[in-house]
Image (cartoon, rainbow, N blue to C red; front, side, top):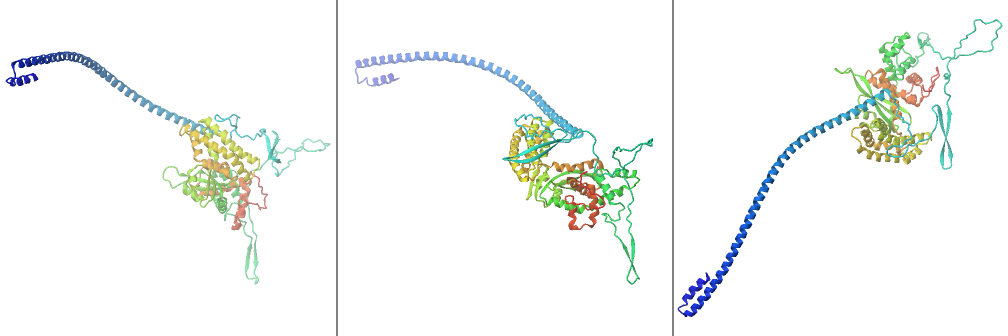
Length: 610
């Protein structure tokens, strides 16, 4: 459009210019126009070329887009197919997951039932062992190392035969103590000798057809043990009565000797009968009905109520001594305690069994060797508080929680029985023999071996303390490390898990015995005294009342203490019942078995254990 403007301008200026100049200008303008047209033609050609190229690219792009749409459609179709397949697989996986969940539940249930079956089998085996097996917890080593360590159990290497008697003497040698073994073989077989001091009755047996010229040159004796049936008789205390006149001869005064002392007033039974009935029940565990039947065969017809009454009153007569015995134990500063069941009749119940389970608690001082039984209606905290009220010192018990709570009181040092921990590993041998035998052989065996060595060497308490600190305590520390490693590897609620967990939970109390040589390692000696209660339960079954349980505890206490001091309880009871009515209160302690010295004159008193 520029040339048009220039043309118009030139026309306006034509009046001032010549035609030649105009012609020249016109030529220049046509040349410019031709140049412009050529440029425009060139640009138009280029535009057509670019348009064609664009159209070609557009067609290619559309074709590519169509191809991509087709591919996308195919992919979408594939995706839809895969989605259907995935949905089908998801449904299949869901069904399989449901099957797996049900199978897992069934497997867990089977595992629980299998574990329950193993527990039942284990309990059945333990029950069979209790019924038919041996009760001893002793183990005999086979000389094989455990599966976890090559260390062998401590052995004293005392070689002896089954019928030999091993005696150990000590002699001082420079630098150490030498132990000399002397083994004396016992005579096997043959006849046993009769007890000494028995009365002999000689019966002459002569030849019937003896020639007149026969001459006696000696005799041949055949010795046989014989007995007479129990001899019953009436003991008559005949007291002479005298009349003494007064000085004025107007009045008379009667003079008669007092009756012999008897613990039960107006009792028609002599002390010997009281001793017989009491010992038969509490030492030989004969129920009163059996005693009544045995007396009946000798023509003695005592009512059942009379037998029961005299036994109870005999125990009541010993009650002041029992309180003194209990006091002696509580002030000793060292008490081992345990408890056992004792069934008692209970007529207050309207339904169910006419009885309840009472508890016979037992306390023992292993140094003074005295035992005291105490009956309680229950087994809770209030019961032990009433027994140990005010006690200060060392208290050895099992792992029962009531003892643990009382052991935390100020002034009380609580110890735990090592035998209870060992017993759980003994029970676990059928469940996990490897771990159980390893603990028994590598830890419990050496610990008890050290205690046995102290006894054989007759060490004093200070030497025992040093030996325990040097040998037992490091062994216990190694034991704890082993327990910490093994506990996570065991299955919960299995016997071996219970054994390891119990030992770890009470380990602090189990180690305390190493602090002092006077402390016992376990309560085995105490549990031996409870055996009498168990035998009584199996025979006379129950006590008639709670008061009957208390009276039984009194006589059981003196039976056990007499046994520990090698005193025949029949002789002790006979002598004490005769002396008790006239014994001053401040001298009652002299009648306790540990201080008792017999003074009875009318029969020989023996202190040998029956």
